[in-house]
Amino acid sequence: MSFISLSPLDIGIAALLLVINAVVSIILRLGLARQMVIAAIRMVVQLLLLGLVLKVLFDLASPLFTSAVGLIMILFAGREVMARQSRNLTGWWAYGLGTTTMLIAGTVVTLFALTTQIRPEPWYEARVALPLLGMILGNTMTGIALGLDRLLTGTARERNTIEARLALGHTMTDAMSGVTRDALRSGLMPIINSMSAIGLVSNPGMTTGQILAGVEPMEAVKYQLLIMFLIAGGTTLGVLGSVLGAGRRLTDTRHRLRLDRMTAADGD
Amino acid sequence: MLRIKDLHRPGLNPFSLDLDAGECIAISGPSGAGKTLLLRAIADLDPNQGSVFLGQINREAFTAPEWRRRVGYLASESGWWADGVGAHFPGHEQAGALLPELGLPADALGWRVARLSTGERQRLALARLLLGAPTVMLLDEPTSGLDPDSAAMVEEILSQRLAAGASLLLVTHAAEQAGRLAHRRLRMEAGTVSEDRP
Image 1 (cartoon, each protein chain N blue to C red):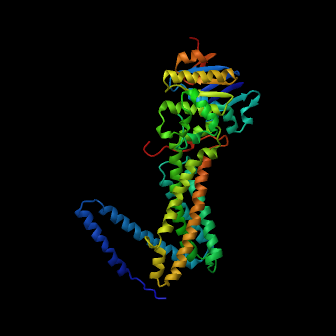
Image 2 (image 1 turned 135 degrees about the vertical axis):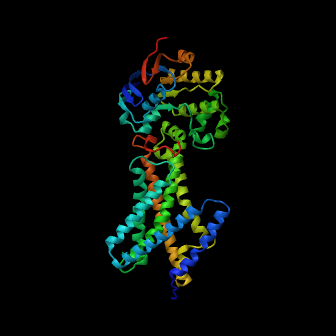
Image 3 (image 1 turned 90 degrees about the horizontal axis):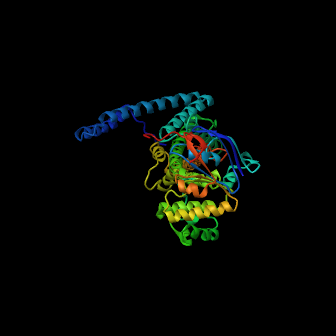
């Protein structure tokens, strides 16, 4: 395996490319220079921190610390899901639903991969578990955010339609079926699209990374396939759980539509 | 037939009413007085307190869908969940027979919802409700968008249903309509219902 290590100087030279961005921004008066500098600094700090945290975790090899970091990742992902909604469920549910479903989907799929396919020694090894969880969470998060957003905006928009069905004696499940299907489709579309475009249009970061790190292309591809299946599974679990959960929350046992359990859209 | 006791929710003060079989009670009042809230509360579409009986049976004894098939509510604004009109009618044969009585051709079932006029929507939504044969009808301004001829046809059908023993709680702004259909008239203001004595 040939692995070429990078020196800080190499990274510094690459960073010079940002100067081109800054110059363009200044000449064309895009007003992006400040934002770009901040974004670049954030990227450097966040990634360095990631490297440090992972190094410490790998050295510690403690299942407790590893799961604590995993949990923190999930909590951040939950915040991200909530921030991407134009409407939200009221109260605890706004944060809790997305976070809980990600916790379940992320944990189940990661444990599944760790214990049956990748099987590192020991099985909870942070070097495998955390990157795996990260990739699954990143995609599940996008799916859940899209699915929930579509469900909440759709339910608010289709209120007349849903209540017309309820008034005719249809069940909540039937009345909500249109918006639920829409929301599930919207949440699952990104993973379906990325599966069909992968290798042709998009060049997966993990495969590229592994090849750069000296892994045989076929070995890297096998890993990528495994990860894609895991991501697809995690996303499906997460989207299903959160969309159906939110659907339950927006209705009650007397088959009523409970828009009072949803906040108004931003700007209303 | 329908017995309501102390039904209330925010925006609706405790309300009691007995509606007999074959009886029509009209409710009028300014916009925002709570007329729609009242009908929705009876249909159990919003959280509410109080008791409602159909005959001797408490509303809680029915599942909500069962209740709403017996106590049918028609909103003033209709809702449509499929592109074609026909998809909203389970029994096309029955529907085809009813539509001409509302001034609509039987082939209206083949129309697209997006191309319906306000009046067509309103009559089709009423037809959809009537085909379920509810014992009690809660109608929210069923003729507000209709021309006089169509409105007369709607009133005729409602009279037939009343004669057949159905009950009707009718929210209407048209005093003449209330005069023609209703046995009793109520007035609603700021969430409170009172007897209307013209």
